[in-house]
Image 1 (cartoon, rainbow over the protein chains, first blue to last red):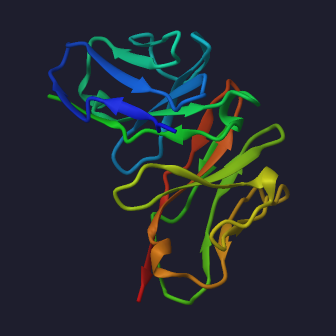
Image 2: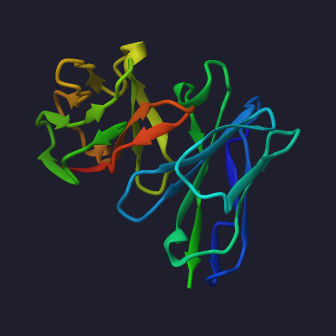
Image 3: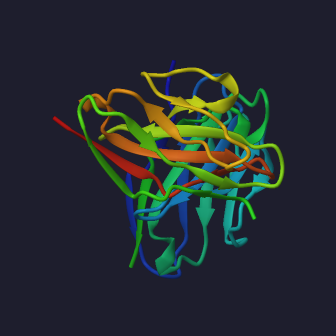
Length: 116
Length: 108
């Protein structure tokens, strides 16, 4: 069984640029959730995708967008980067049996984004 | 408002001593609560969820709706319990709402 993978591991961008982060879900999982974790904070829910559709969204502006592909891998896109977007971005996959946060989520190692 | 509060950023106890990691929540509905753990250089993983009422690695947590708490307890701490612990609440809109985490250090 392959766990959740994320790429890249680290990324440095400048203000105003755009970034795409990638996540491969665990085998057999159809749901992917994305989180932003600032230093010293708990993860903040960005959104969730279930079978290629956005299934819930946290309090993030529209410049945070995502996609889920037929193989259930996912992308997080952030446009017009701001300094405050610097954080660890976590992806988690789940089996989508009960729905939403109720399912056990399996996390990737994260992508560390630095915005200069 | 839906919120999870972990009042201690850092908790340090001696090996063999009891451990209690505090978690308080604010939620208008019927909550489902979780504890996640992150060991050094590892990824976040589920430790336990209140609905299953399991004991994992000697840890237990009881949901107290009157006090809106879900404290994590272990009677005898072990050095391998040193980690970052997060309490989380399954809220509306399919999201998990997280506390800021407590770093647990077990001293030998």
